[in-house]
Picture 1 (cartoon, rainbow over the protein chains, first blue to last red):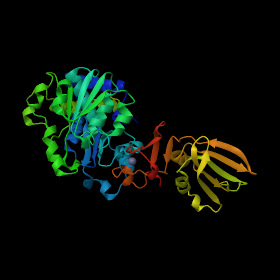
Picture 2 (cartoon, chains in turn green, orange; picture 1 turned 90 degrees about the vertical axis):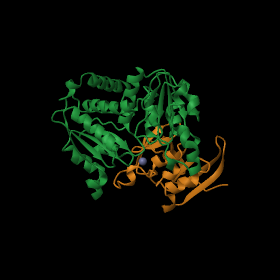
Picture 3 (cartoon, chains in turn brown, yellow; picture 1 turned 45 degrees about the vertical axis):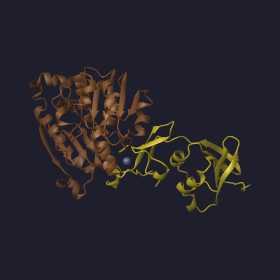
Length: 305
Length: 143
Ligand SMILES: [Zn+2]
């Protein structure tokens, strides 16, 4: 049974296939409207994440399928102490595919070991969130038309931001990709990302502190949230927080075809004034997430359209 | 310094200097009935300094944990005061049940019946990671 727990579970060819399916769905939505007729998706959300859950549910409905599930541990049997393995086996009797979100890292993997239907990791703590990365990849493909020869700026919390780590892994498989890591010292990219991905693959990267200085060379700017609780003291937070807020002024040196991304939800790291800029792609990214989830559900259910 | 020859038993040689007592602990040699000698900072042509453990009894050694703590160890099996077998340790592919994941956000912290399993991810740097959350194991991860 094929599950997707980590973006690296998918080969480049498989990602290509998913991107092609997603673009075909966008071009011919009617063709897919009954593709999953009679199939059920179970959304098992052991912690609330309304936007991810709704994206999966909308994806399944647009494929003509149905959705069952729960959100938050309190309303499910896990509050009564049922193991992930038992939950996975039980739900496998009701549903054809499972999307699972869990606050503990590795929980969807544990579920995939015992489930008899495919499991999609919809986020496990600070660990993996492969469908977010798929959304990011479709956005890059649609906006830039390529994955190679890109300079990607990653800005904000690069230490705890799992979406950033997955994106680095995924993009590192393409040629001539450069990264510019823009963050305060406190939130720099962890060493293991450098040692496991960037250094062995010989990928060019640099670490800088100024968003404005990095701006002119960027093809993509991936913004993340800088959370107050990540700082050791309030003074540092106040000193740094505005540095990593994207405003129209900071975009003055940017390329005309820059693609601005953000995994959302944002708090204030992108000023609302940027939303009307044609380079702002973060709401398209949300929509792309739904299309990629549709493509992934089709692939894992082995539905031919 | 001379520690008496053993007639029958096991000699763990070429232990990285300073790792001898750690191995004594993790192999639970203190719980054995037979005599055990830990020699630290022995002279070694190859290594400069090394530790050696001599066990006067043919006990079962957990080669996985030995490989994790120090893959450079040589295991000498002694019978009738002679070395009858000499084995180099290889890094195990998987270590099950011996290391505990220290990540407080790992699923193993809440699912008690789950086995703690670590996989060799980087042979050159001897990196083992939890199969669930990918947290790196170190010497403190040993149960
Ligand atoms: Zn773990």
